[in-house]
Every structure is written in structure tokens, then in C-alpha cells.
Image 1 (cartoon, rainbow, N blue to C red):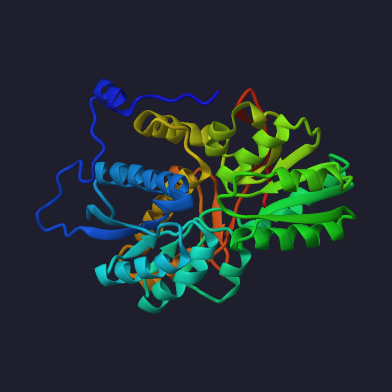
Image 2 (cartoon, rainbow, N blue to C red; image 1 turned 90 degrees about the vertical axis):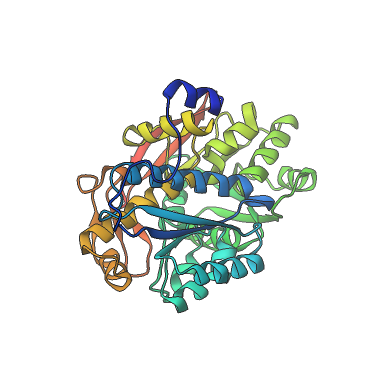
Length: 380
């Protein structure tokens, strides 16, 4: 099972302090400021905490190594309360601080609401959001930190149809930007590959799924595709197992993440699906071990997104050779960041013109409470 460690005890053993500015910089080295705007309260609090902590770990490492182009990183943190309207106000506050870039938000519904604010201000935005509609609006300023739904879901359906022999699937999805986008893409892919499709919407934060499970038992499906946030996924799985419903469960990163595994416990056993990040992948394990030592938790995909977002931006700034936002945006849209250039991006990653990423992902199964990587899936 996923292990936890006490943070204070670990820090005492390691003899280190996690803080910004762990090295001395020249007196004339002006700090560069970044904003972290994310879900630190409300339904998305656990996601935002991992996103923030992954980013702060990267900040600390970079400052301890001399900063970016010799300048130390400073930052400010703003909570969106997991509410799209609040996220707009949070971004307006961020603009008033005039950072070079902002990391966030995670929830797609919030990013849809707030991304124009940063675009109009010319402030680079790196997000944890996966909804396709974010990247179809011609916003040259917003960058994904992992493959989005449209890059992964068609592969999942093809795999379900050809490798697992799935004939009829019901998708249980949150009725928000993330879930509806996933439903539309999965439904279209199911039609393409000859899989019967049904959809059931649930609410963010929903706790009781008795009605939905009763409906599923009457549908004659052989597979459930579960696409809620981690908390809903874990509750759904516990209730599914308690009722003894023997159906195959497939999902995506929010079902397979460390957060869902910790919340769902034994109920998560045997689920499979595609994960954009895996803490079991060799190049990621060093980060995962340090994250666990410092913060007491196995990192979720949100933690990995945040960490890699920082190193992605650092690579682009150093390639340009200046804190020039226009040049950095242009560089990201035109280049591939390889692990030889920057090992802490973990996987070779190319940015498309629309700000989405092209890189490999993982087929994962849960065994004994842990992710097992079955296959690394090529993006080609």
C-alpha cells in the first residue's frame, strides 16, 4: 500500500529545510516572481495541494542550484476555492502582482473562466487542465502540462475494444468541463470502434452513488469507464465493491492517481486505464521519493504536472536567454524539450501550436494498492 511518513521527522533526519532562497545570490540579482493560483480549498483542495507542493519542490531545487539565469525565484500563492468565479478574481489579483508567469489552474472549468485574464495581460499560464475546449479557443498564451483528453481517450477506447473485447461501456463522469469534454470524446471514439456507449453524469463532491449503481446494474454493460475527480472515484469504487457488482472498471489519471488509491483503499484493486504520469516510472521515482519524504504522501499526477511545469518554463527561458515573455511563448510552441536537455521533465515533450503536449503516457493497473506500469504508450 502507499506509505506515509511524518514530515517533521523526515526533515530532522535529512537535516534540510524546504524554503525558497536556499543559496546566496549576488546582491544585484533581482528576483523573478511567479504566481501559483490553484484550488487550495473546496472540492479541489487535495489536487491544489499536490500541484502547489510539486511546484515548490522545483522552486527550491532551482534556487539551490543558482536560480534561473542567475535570478532567484520568488512567488505568491492564491486560492481559487475550487470555484470558477473566484478563479477569475484570483487571476485579476495575480495580474496586479505582475509575475513573469502563473502556474494554474487545475480544474478545467476554472481555466476556461480565467485564462482570458492572463492572455490580455500577456502573462504566460501553465495549467493542469485537460479539457479540449481550453485549447481550441486560439489562446496562444496557455500551456498544458500533460496530454489532454483528445490525445488519450481514443487510444483508451481502441485498447478496450481490441485488447479487452469491450462491447458495451457506461461512462460515469462529473457534470463539469472536464467530465463533459471526456464524455464527448469517449462517445465519439466508442462509435468509431463499434463499442456501445451509455453515459451517467454525477456531481463534483457527490457522496452517494446508490441510484447510479442501480441504473448500471440494469444496463447490461460489461465495463464502467469512471471519470470523476479522485474523491468521487474513490467513493464510487467503495460502494461498487460493497454491493458486489462484478464489472470491469477502466479509467484515466484521476482514477489511477495516488490520491484515489489512498482514499479508495482495497476497493481500487484491479482497476486499469491510461495515466499521463506514473510515480512508478523510473525517471520519475527520484522525484516521487523526495516528494514523499518531504510532504508525507506519494505524489499524484497533479504534483508531477506542477513540478514539470516549472522545469519546462525554466528550459524555455534559458533557451531564449532572457526573461522575454514573447520569445518564451514562441520557443515553447516551436520546440521539443528532451530529457537530455532537462532531465526533470521526465519524458521528451513537444508543444503543439495550440499549447497542448505531445508525449508518451502509461497503461497502468492497480495491484496490491500500487500502480503497475503495464506498457508505455507511444504518442505516435
